[in-house]
Structures are given as structure tokens and as C-alpha cells.
Length: 289
Image 1 (cartoon, rainbow, N blue to C red):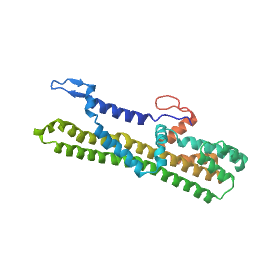
Image 2: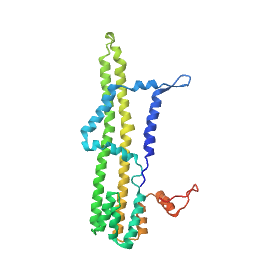
Image 3: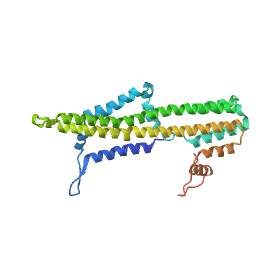
Image 4: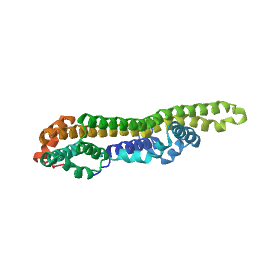
């Protein structure tokens, strides 16, 4: 399958950051004129807030999860940026083709096709059928594999959800630190007013950093990872049902119709239109997948 960039995620995150920055550097004057001054961004830069909110959040995540999971953060970003890594229709087409081969040449003919599969789970499923294993045993092995995979994915998503929950908490810690320092400096007669503004800034900016981390960084990542898990689980359930049907010797067209029940009605109509070369409601021909 040709990989496709997850445009929605990129647009959403970049757009949120852009609008946040615009809000930071602009204000409306009493005569309804908009002023933009990028120097105002410096008002939102505070080293103490960075250490307290960002630093503490990252290190608590490190303390809470295994190092092997932390090291795979780059892989997690690659997963969420690929929006069509798991396409159910791709697997349905593949299974229909395998069913036609098995019907004409027998199950043993699928061994060579299985070796050509790049998806390890798909390859394993086909080989279990080729090796003439009992249908119930095949289903049990594959479903156990799916459950274990989903558990691993859940642990990864929970890591980012944990970070999304920790960040605002440390934002509040930073707020308390700033307020304590501010109250300690309230003796204006001894020059304490010189640090009053910076202490109050730390108190407020840490809360800002915590909210931004939780809702603009970690939250969307966790959601995207759970979406990818659901997509992969769906594709693997389709594979399980498909290989069972192939093993039972069912008609390839019937197998396709059964597997299409995993799809929404709209996706079925689009697939049917692509197969028949019909046109959509705008008059454009729907190409085959």
C-alpha cells in the first residue's frame, strides 16, 4: 500500500499552535485596531516554567514506563503520521484473490502467496491454513495475537495519556512555586518589588505550559495511537474471518460480501462503485483501488 501523510493531524496541531501564537502577539486597541508585536512572545518565555512543567513531566514519564517504550517515541510519531497504513479494503481484495487461488489450485498453492505478504500477521494466518491446522485452533491463535497486540498498543497510548494528565498538574506546581516566591518577596520596603513580576509570571506561565502540553501535544498523540490500534484490529479481524472462510472452501465472491460487513454502508457503496467503474455524485469516475 502506498503510504499517505496524516494531513488532519498535521493541520490540527500546526493550526492550533499558529492560532495560539497569533493570540499571544496580537491585541485590539480601544479604537478597534489590531496590533501585532512578535516581541510579546518573550513575555511567555520563562526558564523556571520550562524546568518545572516540561522537565518534570518528561522525567516522571521516564520514571513511570519502561525504557524500551520511551525509545520508540520516534516510531510512534511515524505511525500517527501515516494515515492509511491499515486499509480494510486492501486486505479484502487480497483475501478475495487468495480465495480464488485456493478454489482453483487448492490450499497448498497459497504457500507461495503467503511468502509474498509483507504483513507478518497476514503471512502467519495464511500459513496456518496451508499447514492444515484445525479451524478453531487457527482462530484461537490469531485472536490471541490480536489481543496481545492491542494490549501493547494500549500501554503505549496510556503513556501519552499519563503525560497529558501530569503536565497540568506540574503547571499547578509551578503556579504554587511562583506564588510562594511572590509572597516571600512582598516586603516592598527592602526592594522585593523587583522580583514580584517575574514570580507572578512563573506562577501563570507554568499553568499555560501545562495546558499546552496536555491538549496540543500529548492528548492528540494518544488519540491518534488509539485510532491506529482500532484500524489495525479491524484489519486483522478481517484477515481472521477471511482465512477461515478460505479454509472452509467458500465462494470468493461470498467471502468478499461477508468481509464487507465490517465496513460502513458508505464505504461499501464506494467500493462497489470502484469495482464497477461508476461515477460519483459529481460525475467523476471512481477509480479502482
